[in-house]
Length: 352
Image (tube, rainbow, N blue to C red; front, side):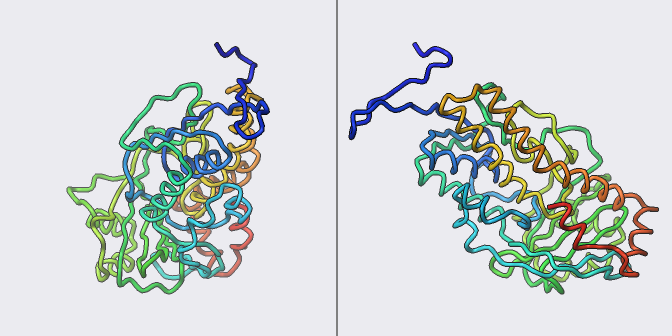
């Protein structure tokens, strides 16, 4: 019988020396955070079983724009190769219903979750990880929770769709109104990802891309809706999500990714934060697997690392989100933008 605090030992076949056995780890949720942490742990000799509620490949509501994550983080997680075929992006613009407000530099990469999640799960499996798809498990001690944001009352509706034959003026185009905001980003194979956050309203029977166009027109973004109507919208890529709040989440003790915190989507930093949260959890999880930390100690160390890393950007983004969604504040913000009195590059840095 294994006693608490005693690390079981195994004899090495090659040397005959005794070496500590690493405890296996279970991860709930096969999105960016769960898969990248699973890859990092599996590559370090920790046996990982990952449960994903759906299957691969699949579409997810996501900006599909990676900006802010460093090369060191990707290398530490062992996932840099999974982004080799991402589209490199540089230029960005911000507009409202009356026209363009500003242009800026926003270096990043565009890649669909359909492709990226598939790359990551293949990498995980190639390392010997155990992947159980179409599987939902309950939170419990010993399970790292990466199963996404918890459902809670919310006025927000997130919508996403891919398009072809949609010319862009910049690699990333952002549009805002008091009714919501939306981003258009170049991804692979000449496609454009369209992802928006709207104040939820009765959809009057609209479904698929028709719902997206309806929400755009209700947000007074008529010119953008006209552009999308003229493009080839991929109905199979359409998906939506509701019942969520941004900011810190109240999830299980050892949570990562959106299950731990969710930055407002307009920042374009959500995907990067998923990878970074996996990096924050990596050493605590390794310490638990090696018997150096209890489960609670490892969970607390992961949470502390994420809090330290994300506090500034979450706070700044929450303030900016309120300004974007408040009619009076947005009017002032747009006036300052048109007069070139807003430090966009500084604000961009603060949410990364």
